[in-house]
Length: 213
Image (tube, rainbow, N blue to C red; front, side, top):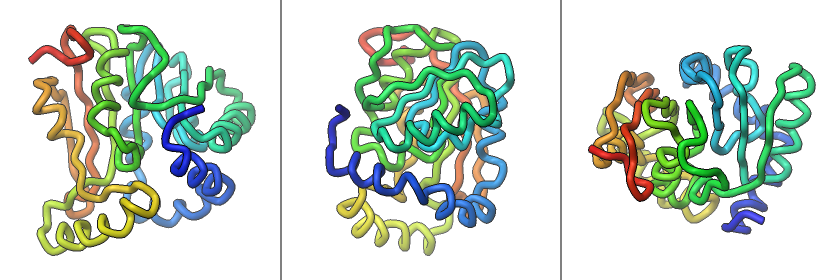
């Protein structure tokens, strides 16, 4: 069983209606994000916090896909969706901050709109880098602190409610963590007043779970 049982129960409850609740937000805020990220995946690919499997249709056909999530209810939906679209996938229940895979396992690691909800986001980034092969692709999309200060102020206010309630952060920025770790970023772009960010990074050989500068 994954840690953070309160959050796991929350996402289990959200699973049946999650796609419906998010459809309007996705159309307005990040209609191209999943395609941007998933189209860059190659080879053996791990999707961290795969959720309901909304990304499945966006991966290239030759990607060998593995998914992990701490919600069994979300994984059930992913399994059903994978069957519907005839996509082979290996699914695991587990924690993004303690991935159950050896070092250098994957050619690509993908995460979309999940690092905002993972309690140990820095550990999740480090784990993603650990399981990536040197020269592999770390592909991320998330909502982050806006580049427009009035929106950013509202996001900080929202954090006061959303973080204790269900662990969602509106002011994180994974790119800052990658810069701190010295991970080379191949391309990045921001949209919607800087709230949505896409990242393609390529780590160098790592030591002790940390990417070399």
